[in-house]
Structure formats: C-alpha cells, structure tokens
Length: 618
Image 1 (cartoon, rainbow, N blue to C red):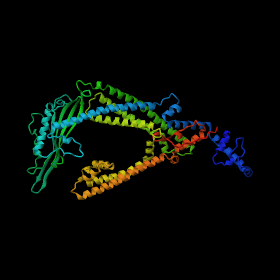
Image 2 (image 1 turned 30 degrees about the horizontal axis):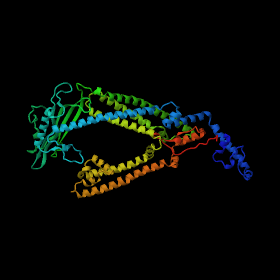
Image 3 (image 1 turned 45 degrees about the horizontal axis):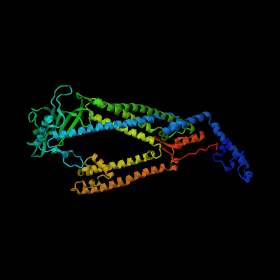
C-alpha cells in the first residue's frame, strides 16, 4: 500500500465505498454499487486526494521542524530523569539535579539529626536549670507544681498574706547570695557587668500606683491616683530588712485606715553564671550567663499574688573553650550542606526559568495554531514545575539555617542564644521537610507512588472550598463555647483552649471529660453543654469527616476512570496530541501524553489511557 493510499483510507468521514484496493484505485464495493454510484465514487476519490494535499501545502518543512522541536522539548520536560538520560539526552549524560538533590537530602538529614541532638541537650539543660532555680529560690516550692498544666493536679503557686509575701522576698534574696554554697550545680554569682565594671547581682523593684483612699462608712472611693510608679534598689547581704523602700512593701499592701492596696508587683532580678559540662557524652564545656526574675504578680488585686520565675540565658566564652575543636565534624557537614544547597538551588532556578521560556513558546505556538485562542492557566501550571519552586525555597531556607548553625558551632557569643537555637531549628526543619517532599516527587513517576499526589491535586480546590465553609462554622462554635460555657468549664476558659479542645473533640479526644468537667451547680449551663457537644459532634464528626472521605473517594475514582480523564484533559494535553498526530507517523514518537500526566508538581503519574498512532508502513 502506498502512503497516498494510506492517507486516503484514514481520511475522516469517508465511506467504505471509497476505500482503495492494493493494486490501484478500483472500488471495493459490489458491482451493483459500482453501476449505481460510479459518479459519487469519482467525486469521493477526488475529495480524498484534495484532503491529502492540504497538509502538504499548509505544513511547510520549517513549520514541521518547529512543531517537532517544540514537541520534543515538551516531551523532555515532562519525562522522568531516567528516560531523559537514556533517550532524550543521550547515554552518558547524568541528571545533575537529581544527583545534587540526593546529596542535599542525605546531608540535610544528617545535619538536622546532629543539630537535633545538640538542641535536645541544650533544652534539657535549660529545663533542669530552671527547675533547680525554683527549688533554690522559691519558698515552699514543691515537685507537684512541675507536672503538666492539664489536667491540673495542684493549685496555682501563689501567696495570700502579707507576712508570706515578705518571707518569700527575703527567702529569694538570701538564697541568691547563698546559691554557690547550697546548690549541687555549678552556679556562681556574677558581679561583673558587660563593660568590666562591678555591680550588685540582685535588684529589687516595686511597681505601685500613687494613692488610693476608701471611705469605709459610705463604702465608696474618695480619691485615687492610678499613676504607676516604679522604684528599684540594688540589694546586697548588708541591706536592711525593709530594703530601704519608703513607703515600705508592708505599707503598700495594707488596706487599713481607709487606704487601698497599691502594690501591683514586686520583681527580684538576679544574675548568675553556670557551666554546662556533660561528662557522659564528652561534649565541650559551655558557659552561660543566667538572667533571672522572680515576679510577684498582684496587678489584678484579687487577694492572690501569683509567683513566677523566668530565666534567660546568654552564652559567654570560657577561658578554656574547646567548642570549635569539638564541633569540627558538624562544621564540615554544615559547609557541605551550604555548598550543595547553593549548587542545587542554581540548577533549580535554571530549570524554573527554562519552564517559563517553554511556557511562553508553547503559548505563542498554541495561539498561532488555534487562531488566537489563549492557552489556559491550568496548562501553564502544568509546564511550571512547582517542585522546582519548592526546591528553590527549600535551598534558601537550608542555606540561612546552615549559616546560623555555623555561627552557633563557632561559639559566637550572643544574648539571644535560645532564640538562635529556635530559629535555626525551624529553618533546618522546614528545609529538610521540603527536601524530603521533593525526593518523593521522583518516586511519584510510578503510578502507585504518584497516586497520593494525583488524588490530592484533583480534590484540592473542592477541599479548600469545603474547608472555608467548615472554618466559618467552626469559629461560630468556638465563640459560643468560650462565651457561654467558658466561665464554668475548665476546657473552655480561654479562646485558645476552646479552639484546641473543640479540635481535639473532633478526633474523639476526651469527649467524656468535656461532658462532665463543668460546674454542676449551674443546671442550665450543664444542659446547654450537653446539647452543644451533641450538635458539635454530629456535625463535625459524623457529617464533616464523611464528606471529606467522599471528596477524596470521588477524586480517587476519577483518577482510575479513563473516560473521565480523557474528557477533562487540559488543552495542553489535547494540543500535544494534535501536534503528534499531524507531525509524526512513526513508532519513534513517544510523548508524555502516552506515559504520564503533567500536573502542578510536574509529571506526577502515569496515564492509564493510551493513544495509538497508525504506522503507514504496515
């Protein structure tokens, strides 16, 4: 069969009577049909020949070459690295981006593990240090106060009498000066400030308002001046019992002779030094300066003074500092992470720019071929590989986090060492998370591995719309529970705790406790609590979660429905298919339409649908 005959057979819309025989253009119809339809056959043959000539006229060699080049670029763009290495780019050409990603993946993970161990030890040191301070400086402190805040096992650590307040203040001041001789840890009093001068390590400050006079006979306030005043005094071992304040602490607290309680708070600031030496792990010696504050809070003047101790830590240089020598391995790992992250980031940026150029070229070609029709945004996002953008962001975050980790490993002194540890941990954690997600992207070229991404992508916009509705409804329930039930329910006492409690109830956490942990004296509130929780559980546990499951089930079914996928293909896939049919008639043409479905994360899954191209040589 000649090529012309092949095109004649495959001309759309032709009758079977126009099919040629192998030896020529004789009709394959019956003799009766030949006699009756001889004129129609000649017209059909002529029309078929004219239709065959049209693509020859309109597809010049330059246009075919342009389409060929664009199709191969799209094919190479959506292919997996292995296919590009073996077919599109020639044997011996390695996928640089994938290899660099593997190095970044391993090094980032190892760096994060090392930093996690250091940070865990540092956090453990701070926690134990803070607990030690409370036992040493707070009178009548008990281990019962060190339990988790929920469910509460003890009351609030507070003071209720003036005598106890004075005893607690004296106890704290005395024990700060005695801490080197009473503590089992390495604590020292700091008497030298940042400029090298000497200073007193303890400062006592009173915070109160000026005047407040109350007429007991008429039970009304006669005069009050709420202007706040702060008075501070440096304290040493020889300071008098009242610490030289006028008015004294006792006078500010007494409500006799028609005077109001004016004391709002008392703070005791102290400065200590501590040495962190872990003989078990052999870690380098670390020296820290501790700035602590014991705060007696009476700002609400409700008969209860809450006592809190807060400490902040800064790193100071030890005389025999060997931190840098002990962290050579971590410094080298951080340097390697920096190097490979920079290189990989440059390759990802280049790939992203190439995607933009390819998208523009495809849009121009599509507009020209489709008579001014513009390529959809969905098609553009299929060309823009979101994975490259995620990798660029991941590399930037990892680079910044590695620089901060290098500064910590080098022992750079700072007053914000805790904040640096927190910030570095956040950056390295997010960088490593994005890297692991990007590695999973390459596994997703397999149909099974890519199923998760495909289902999530197909259901993303529906889920976001559904979440918007649920968020509005959930906020209404939170406000109701906080305002109506909060005064009588420990789990709804604040906006934050209400939000967290209702979110936990959705997953079946402590439902019975939420029903029962309410003041039983308020009968109406108890009934409202039961009705509220039943309605909430019915909506957010039964209805909402089942709708979520139904959304993902629908997306999963669509992912396996070839007819649905064919009907909902993007105009990019349809355009690539039309270019293939027009420009290529050989088995060598194997495009991404056959192998994988482009998505916002790149080529994420294999299509089940197949597209067969007839071979004219058969």
